[in-house]
Amino acid sequence: GNVSLHDGMSAFLADSGSSVFGFDYRGFGRSEDVGSLRRGELLADTEAALAHLKSREDVDAARVGVYGVSLGGPFALHATAGDPGVRAVATVSTFSTWPGVASDFAPVLAQLLIRGGVSSTDAVARLGDRPYLILHGMEDEVVAPRHAEILAKSARSAGVATTLWTDPEGDHNRRLQRNPEARRQVTEFFREHLGVAPASDGPG
Image (tube, rainbow, N blue to C red; front, side):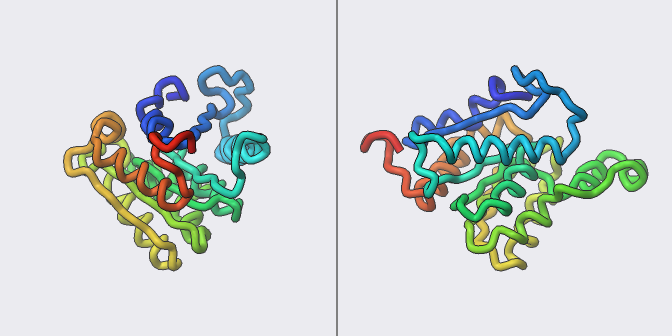
């Protein structure tokens, strides 16, 4: 997927009064530099996007949150863990580790072929005092709901203020993004921790 396909996962934030900056990794959407698509390169892209965002004159760098969906979750968490200026992070349908999610489909091959690294569970343990919101659909056929529990446990064990919200009928993306309560959870989370004004009060 790319930015053009994820409008439904973030447009509601803009409607609620937040400013939203979306980007594509190299090799995705309109990005032409394919590279090798290694995890380290995609993390570097995430960190570069965050640095660019915070350098803009129209952005209050002291009020930035990070929001990662599915594949974007591990990179969102690592970028947040590495930047103490980010105030809050939320992930949707995110997996705990790469070998872990691969093993849900091919247990033996995953152990042989999929290496660790850029692990979400490692990143959440480094969030410090930044709050963390996890959303997951219990009918997710791509990333099993167990990953949300693993992330929540890892974060809470490290003392991170963590909220886990699940949709009993939510699938990987479509049903979850259409759930008004899921959108409210994300909106209120960032409003509380970034000081975003309601849309009727002007731009955030």
